[in-house]
Length: 180
Image (cartoon, rainbow, N blue to C red; front, top):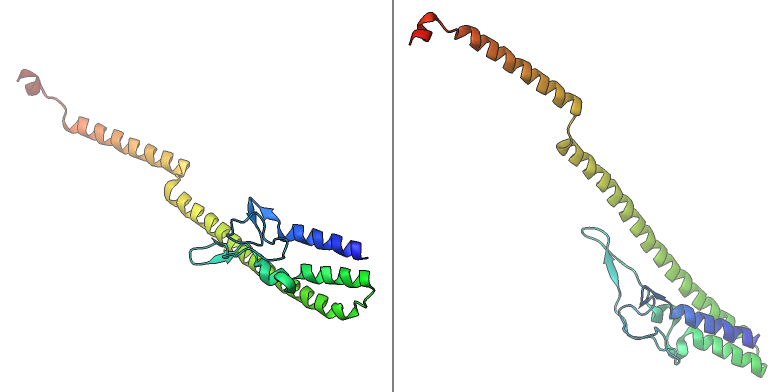
């Protein structure tokens, strides 16, 4: 069981050091190669935010130190202590409350990420709706109604022909116009 717990700790370390597009998910703006080192200390971070609207931003990272803990107070140290207690034959029932506390912290972080994801989804829906509305407005302004334009052109052409015919009758040349 101790070996399995150590394996879970190693897997959790991999999760804590996971990167997305070349940046650590749990180390914010840190340029360190890993978010958490072998002493379970997290790199100093600043939160990473992205603009999702004209007046709103959303955090796109998570604070690893508050999520996993840091140093001797981290979940990694807790798993090491449990593995050590199991090897020594110490009763680990007292560690259950510590595990529950860490689990509660993780669930809180998941809820916060879920809320931010919902915020991003709402902004996406609003932006999509605005895009459709703006495209409809642009279309009303710029696009032509081909049938209406052809009808207007025919009407103007008929009016022009009628004006030429009237002008030709009014200004008919007389014999005097030829003699001059």
